[in-house]
Length: 178
Image (cartoon, rainbow, N blue to C red; front, side, top):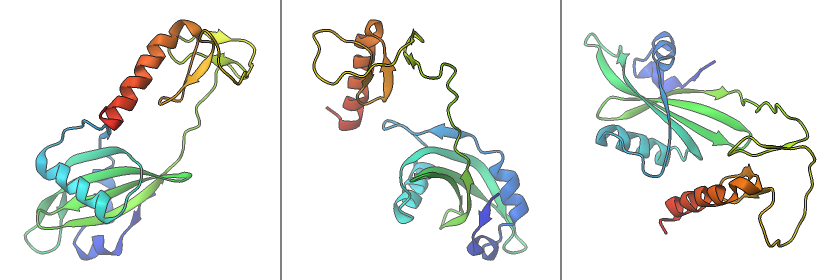
């Protein structure tokens, strides 16, 4: 259920219209090299900065939402930002009228628990291979064994270790720009 801001009503956005248009949003996973149209990109960057929105994982840009502020209704752009606040994930919605951006409301997104099809077993995230027993060894080894790869949080079997290592290096280099 969307929690609407008071300013959204003052600015002429109705709960029914917000609900209808928000349901049409298509979410895009963010990435460091993401490209957006200039105005929408700058609008989203400004709301993230101004509202100090943490850990944004997805954004959404929609054609518009009707503002009923006066007799001359107009269409504003509609943006969504999905952020992670500790144990809570929240979608926050904004209308961009061109001259200003109005926070419309937000809602908590229930966290989906990943389903483990093989409980108490290690599964390689790269090839699906299953290790029946779980063992943890701390220390250095001469050859790769089952391990969690830094930078990805994924488990890998010895057969996929080089592939997993490359993915981790690419991810870390993409973030640091190294």
